[in-house]
Figure 1 (cartoon, one colour):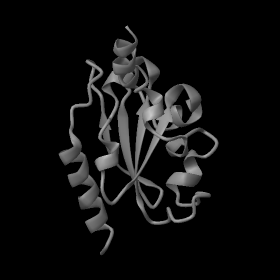
Figure 2 (cartoon, one colour; figure 1 turned 180 degrees about the vertical axis):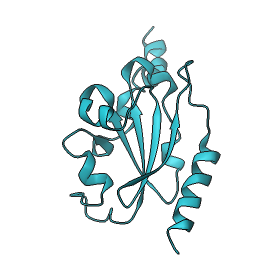
Figure 3 (tube, rainbow, N blue to C red; figure 1 turned 90 degrees about the horizontal axis):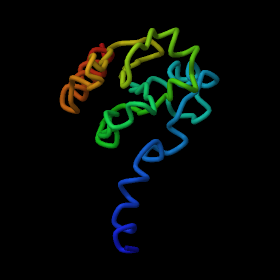
Length: 136
């Protein structure tokens, strides 16, 4: 029995904790981070990918965030950021927003089935286009 528990532990604990605390935003720090005025220091002019996440739909979260290149990733628990959720009109979770220089550039949102109808390739392609467009 104890071996079964040891095998199941990684699957049970894979929820909100899969993203380190420093990547979680709240109403308090959201605008500073996306505008490039973050306390983390080197975020200025970086493309930022923000996932609006919900506990009730954690199984369908964007779990390939570590593979995203040329963008900073952050996650927002919609229950802990009601002002930001309202400001950006987040109706479904997950919803991904891509920001550049504090401006929203792209949106990917879950459908009525609560699944994100996009994949890492499409998201990465969008990030690449945003980064290339901002070089001119």
